[in-house]
Each structure stands twice: as C-alpha cells, then as structure tokens.
Length: 190
Image (cartoon, rainbow, N blue to C red; front, side, top):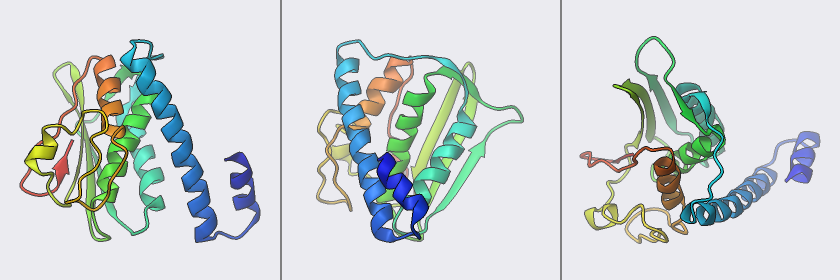
C-alpha cells in the first residue's frame, strides 16, 4: 500500500492508480476485519477507549469515503447541540464501524443520492444515525442483516462478503451499545 501511495504522489492522478490504492486499502481492511471478528467472537477484541468527538470522526469518514466513490454523492453531517458529542470509545474501531456503514450507504445510492449522518446526545448515550435515500432494505434481509455472512442480496445493487455489519455489531456491542436498522419509507437508516 505504501508503494502505491508513493507512486500516486509522484504521478499525475489516474483512475487506474486510484482504483489500485483503493483495492489495496479494501484488502487490508478485510484482513483486519477477519482478524478482529475472530478476536471479538472469542472475547479478545483489544479496545483502547478514549474520549472521542464523534461528530469530528464522522466528518473525517465522510470526507474520505465519499470522494472515492465512482459517482458524486451529496452528504450531510448534523451534530445536535452546541457542544461536541464525545464518547469513551476506541477511535480506531469506531472509525471502521462508521466506514463500513457509510461505505454501504454509498454503494446503495446513485449519483444524485444523499447520505446523511446525524450525531446527537440522548440522555447519557451518544447516538450516531447514518442514512441514505436509496432503495429500502427488504424485511427478510433486515431481520438477518447483522448475522455473519449475510451479504448476498440479489435485489439490491451490490453484494458483499457479509462480514461488515456483523463486525459493526460486535464492535458496537463490545462498547456497550446497540446497532439496528430502522424502517424508513425509502432508503436505509442505521
């Protein structure tokens, strides 16, 4: 990955080079995800919690993930209240959860689609909602979305290996939180 990034700095930007860098990043992420899923299933997931500004983290994820998408997409980040919404989380793992969900939101909308991220404090909990205005998730898939290897769905635009949302569930639950998919009239909301 470092070699590709160095080449990318030296050469004019090209879609092929950008695709290669992105493919290596995805492969590295998949390997890390496989290792972390195994560790989480065995109760060995290493977390280093620290106060983290969730709005800032979501903004970083959005600015990194969406420009890499093939089509321009509109994004919106809303942080409720005047103060930052902070939580004692592992920022590395929390970033990967946000990247997974934002990545899914990006894959399931077209070039005019919208991805919205809302960060708010509700009582003593921090709540992050990620939604898009793409196709709705079928009820039968919604019921098993966070299970291991539930990634193939022929009725939607993309398919995955089925570890991303399972990984998200393990990480969120290891932090003492919950993750779910809501049932909006259109699109998806996590």
